[in-house]
Length: 97
Image (cartoon, rainbow, N blue to C red):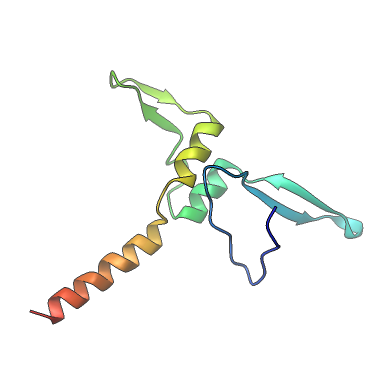
């Protein structure tokens, strides 16, 4: 496990590592718990339930298990970061014309 996070910043979610958070309990106790897929979706900037369903090769809609959802989210690009970069690139290209 990596060093603790301070300042309300979340570490990068990756598909190859567990998604855990340290919670403080009453009496000074701490515990590790796995982030839910919905919490990971929120951290990545996706709407709740974004990875809940997927399509088979035949186009059939199926519910995805949590393991698959964690893999998808760990391999995703964070939406707010991609949006910021896209807007900034547009500004730069428009100003150079």
